[in-house]
Length: 495
Image 1 (cartoon, rainbow, N blue to C red):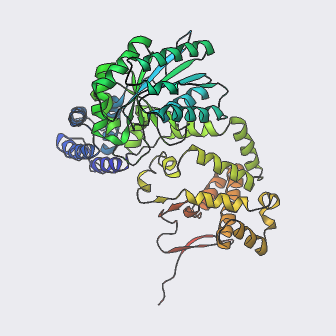
Image 2: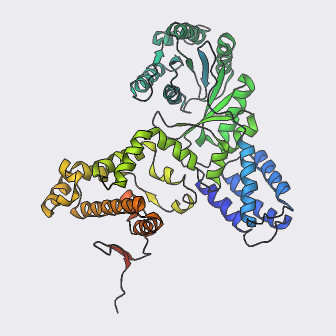
Image 3: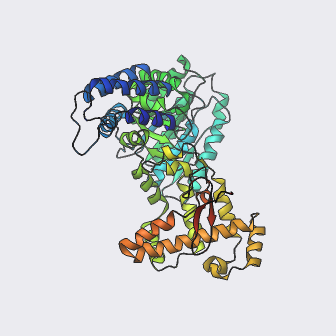
């Protein structure tokens, strides 16, 4: 999300490299570039001014720590100020006892409110909390059915053993606009149903509008007055830029929202809403939507987002995603198979699916320190992973467990069955054999084995994982050669 902003800030702070002391002149020069980058990222003007002034005030005259360079020292200062700008945040949702905990979601139409209701229900379900989602948006006739379909999809999900219920009164849509308090009545009956079902949390999906008006706010205030929700969360579209800040400020002024859910955080936007909304409204970001799937909702951690902005990665979030997809027992089983050299194509396919459930490949790689900026010109084609899965699926169980049985005729059959070329099948087999060799070296060779494994890794073809445009280990104009001396080698120029 912050790709352009990250590159601009890194470039500005890089100008401080090689200096022995951070002076006011070079700090102000760097912060002029940072200020421009933040404004281009659609960060609110008042927030930019205050942020830059705070960084200059802290940085001017700071002695450079002996173990750090001035650029690194400045990155530390900017990181701290970014965390202060977006935090502090109490992650998660409060829970009352006895329940149910009432969570009211509000926002403008098109912000992703209904889908976010499903994501929040899935998030609570994964943590063992039973949920009821009530359709209080009666303005759009299809909104009740849309939410019911979303909730039913979440309820079918295998993750988490808690129950997810739906409450809706589609017939009330006909009364909406003619009778006062119809939505309030639906919410009150939903609360009674939630108490009868003994659920932990009741989520109210309230109505939205294309723009903020008194009719919308009066209805939301009436629901707030009658049901006294324990948490009011505002759903804001990250792609809305400054409009998102205006909407957040208006909702907070009338409802005193407890937190904000920023949707479409994985989109290619400028990111200004994430940096501005807490400072402008006083309401912290509680969750971010990072994809279309119902499990693509993450708790917001300012220090992690600040790390992403500065190109420091977000390894903690990456590990948390991996832990959600792979259990500890499964990880130990795979580690044992790798150490013994029994890692098969079936295991590879299982790991590939786990990685894909974690999110788009470019997003995952961007969480690794220093990798995000390297990927700016790389076209990460997730469809290439579909081709890899297709090739593996076209193999027989015998072939997947032992690639040594593959012959030219078998390779041609696999290529036909997966709509691939025989060369692609051969390339996947070679890469897989290199991975197997690498794993054996890492598990049994000590430091020397790890060194050999790193050398083998340098021979792998990034395009196999859909990373088109990634620099080849052999440099420009290199070609891949199989066999005992496999790897990328420079083409010899013709004389």
